[in-house]
Image (cartoon, rainbow, N blue to C red; front, side, top):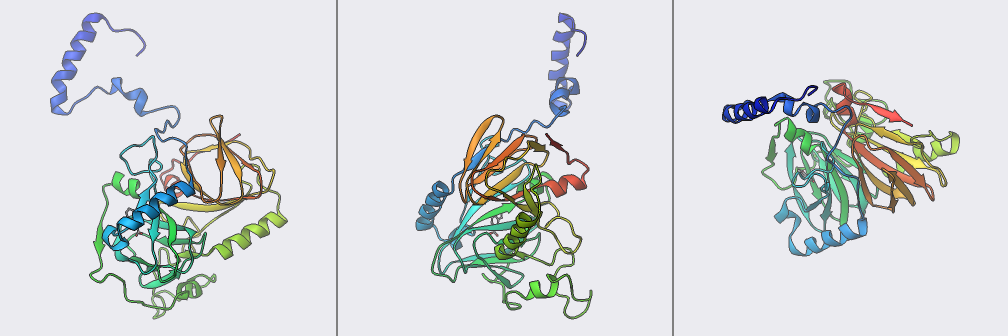
Length: 350
Ligand code: 1HN
């Protein structure tokens, strides 16, 4: 407020607030500055989870509770600035899921969109509407909203992946629905790879014909490491790195050329050995996974060492500088596409 209140007015206002409060009425002028900030002021913090540490706790949980008992055996990576929220950023969730040999995580579906980014193990599957995606390290697998999904591990090793979901976003809109399939696994509908052949070759079955069996809004759900890594390698061989991103590729939805899901954007980037990015801040708080290499993330003057399989969260509007010691490959996901649809996304490139 510009001019100070008299003591008398201040006292009377206090009494007025106390009288209004039981009726659900509050003075905006007391809180306006905190509601409409000149810049984002996320309570979320920059945080890194070391993979080896989290993995150890996850395996210990695996000795005590089965995937079937837990429904999903997951350690939530909760942002220390958002306690009690089960959130990594204000809009997105991150967790590490373990499925042991022989286990099944039962079939369900929910309004929330999910991605899986494989950390270790090979040969377990996520089945989406009854089609298995056989998972290998650093594959991206989607379970878009309301698509049936179960997980199973028919391999001989533990399988661990990162789950990324829009749980806080759906909670924000009070729009959560979920249901279980009466059977623990969805009946197998087609052989693994069928969707990639039908919808992943810059072609698709003609709409409404007998072969058109996937959702029109997002038919694809498996983006294999072998494919994205080759594309990134080609960029690195043929193109100068972008000063802010290095070599970067976004995963797209072939239905509309946009982000993989309505609320989540996902990308990979390769920073060549010795590269230091220009500083950049963006409104989409981002969760990164280190795929290969070593490097440093500098945020707010603090250096965070990055090792393979570590998870790093950088909240909205924190200026990030990435330094690559060796070739550094990162996977990242954020709510950028949701913000773009709402006209909110902004970035600052320094
Ligand atoms: C979920 O359905 C999975 O299907 C993993 O694997 C993590 C976290 C919150 C809500 C639903 C899964 C989840 C989840």
